[in-house]
Image (cartoon, rainbow, N blue to C red; front, side, top):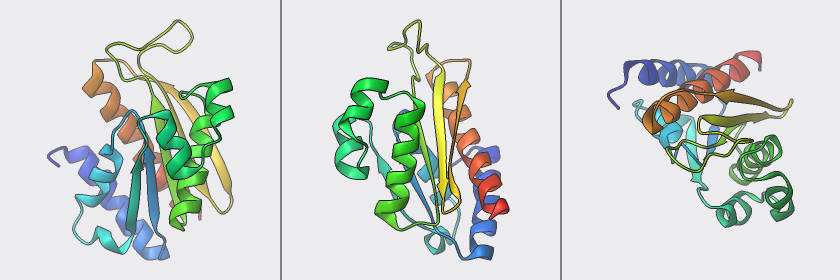
Amino acid sequence: MNDPLLRSLAAELGTLLAGRRWRVATCESCTGGLVAAAITSIPGSSRWFDEGYVTYGNAAKTRLVGVPAGVIEHEGAVSEATARAMAEGARRASGADVSVAVTGVAGPGGGTAAKPVGLVWIAWATAAGTRAEVARFDGDRDAVRRAAVVAALEGLIERVRAG
C-alpha cells in the first residue's frame, strides 16, 4: 500500500488493537476489500486481523454475514440498516472485538436522486453497541473509495480508543 495516510491510520489502529488485545473484522461492499488491504499492509497485522468479508452483492451480504434479505429489500443495500447489519454480522461471524462495514455508491454510475454517487454508509460494531454514519464524498470512483477507507479507519481508531 503506497498511500501514506492509509498506512499511518492502519498502523495506529494496529498499535491500539494490540494494546487492548482486540481483533478487528471488516465487511465491505463499495470499497471491495480496501479497508482490509490497508490493515493487512502493516507488518504483524495477523495479531489483530483474522478475516474480512467482501460482500459486493446483496446475496453475499445475506449468506456471509447474515444481513436479512428483507432489510436489503426494504431499505436498500446502501442504507443505515444494511450497514449496521453488515457490521454486526461481521463481528458475530468472526468473533472479533470490533468490526467495520462500508456500503455505498462509488460511481461513476449507479447513483440516484435519493442515493447519489459518493453516498456511503459506514458502521462500526463493538460489545458496547453499533454506530452508523452517512457521508457524501466528492470525486471519482477512486476518490470516493479512498475517502471511505479513511473514514472507516478513523472510526475504528475512535472505537478502539473508547474501549
